Length: 314
Image (cartoon, rainbow, N blue to C red):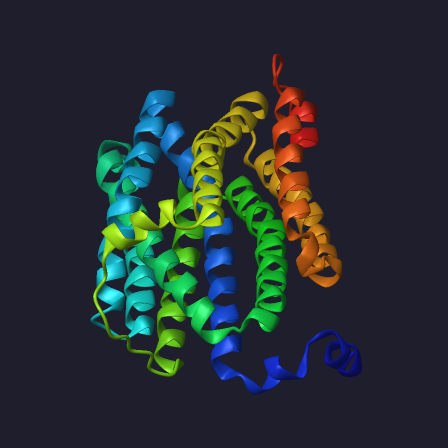
């Protein structure tokens, strides 16, 4: 087993402490969000039974993320990058703490919860992405992203299914509060890990205007920016509506966990194959194929949203 891992994992991974710490932090983030993030929407739905309320919560989250990215960008020029990562992880931990403390009144705090989550996501992802580019090199970045994708998919397999089982066996809201508490604990561990990174300070001034201006100077930059924008439009809708459809169709948290298990298992193998075999010169083709699959999958759920159709879509 050890020899197999040695052949699978390149030597530089063993000798780069920050590389391993960042992967572990990303894995803890993935497991924590896989456990709870899906079920927060259901938790709020069961309290309000109003799709507009869930949409408002998700809208607050995405509106505060750009603000968080901007503030975190300025912070990375003034503070150690790992401190900014710690702030992001800490805010996500605060989100689950507030959900736990609010209990059955969480649906009355939709804007506040969405704002905390959005700020946490924005700060975390800006710091994480910056650290990814600092800790990895062009020749090691595919390996990092491949392993991070494997960890995320594995977390997506065991997280929702485990959460679904816990909620199934603990009636009422006790199961939900249990998985939120576990997520809080995982983020607390990630905060502790952040103290073991090497300090990474930066100089210069954060200028959002110069970044925006780059659209006119670099065609590839502009294209990937628009691609992210339209991907965000899609994800912003389907990240919560699919979850609600599955729950309202089946009335079962276990069905939601099963959906997460199956879709993430397929993602797990896809990440492994792509990370291992996709060559750099074929990356654009990979983006095109993936985008086409995401587009065509929508036709499966147009009309009647049965659980079988939703599983095929997933």
